[in-house]
Amino acid sequence: MSEHEDALFDISGKVAVITGGGGILCGTIAKGLSRHGVKVALLDIEDDAAKKVADAITSSGGEAAAVRVDVLDKKSVQAARDAVLKRFGKIDFLINGAGGNKPEASTSPERDFFDLPVEATRWVFELNFMGTFIPCQVFGKNLAEQGEGAILNVGSMNAIRPLTKVPAYSAAKAAVTNFTQWLAVHFSLNYSKKIRVNAIAPGFFLTHQNRYLLTDEKTGELTPRGKAIIAHTPMHRFGNPDDLIGTVAWLLSPAAAFVHGAVIPVDGGYSAYSGI
Ligand SMILES: NC(=O)c1ccc[n+]([C@@H]2O[C@H](COP(=O)([O-])OP(=O)(O)OC[C@H]3O[C@@H](n4cnc5c(N)ncnc54)[C@H](O)[C@@H]3O)[C@@H](O)[C@H]2O)c1
Image (cartoon, rainbow, N blue to C red):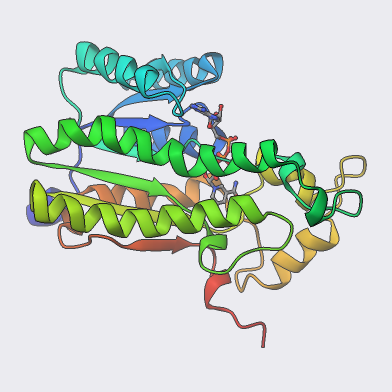
């Protein structure tokens, strides 16, 4: 690589706050960014999970810290921000990865739409939307004050077209897409032209939140929904969490300096495929 290309993708020495950093996708993203020289703060409500990721990073020579946070509680997010600043002295990137779905908020043969419990539905909507909005307020203020940085939200394929069974999750991720665009414009017009806001829209990755929908608990075989997803994914597989690292590193790097308010699918072609 030439010197110019090295600088284009250089994110070493930057500090990234990653909510949901104890989870499967964001834990993998954190490890990947650490290999690019990024110092990572793993914020998660499950502090043991975040600590495991932080330990794995530090034992392979990176810099990481685990901080407990509830992304739905602004005071908790503010306390986490203070802890990150104390440890690393600055914040360059915010990745909003805390999110997910739960069976109680999904329709099924036993639970049709009319019986979806409001509380579970509200929980899913709030976790995915407010759980992105609140950290953007808290950490975004730091970025606005320093005049530069990047925010990366984690949307989903189902923001583009809703998936069956998961109405609150789909609607919340659509809200994340809309908010990503809103925030990109708002930051540029009001605070700085050097702060970028984007999102990734992952396709299907087999993790805790969807395993019950995609595989049979007893046999481990694909469910009809799992088979339909593979059939509608031109690359004919689920994503591996590692598939996200390059896109995330690019979106945070100077190489993406003019990419703003964008939602980038990482889905093996799922969203491009009409099925015919
Ligand atoms: N798995 C997929 O196929 C897929 C597809 C598209 C988008 N996503 C999105 O990617 C992100 C990561 O998903 P994942 O599959 O790695 O799930 P995951 O469950 O492994 O990770 C989510 C993490 O968020 C944390 N969390 C939950 N509530 C929190 C709260 N109130 N405060 C702080 N942390 C909280 C959890 O403890 C967990 O560690 C989510 O936003 C998810 O919606 C996943």
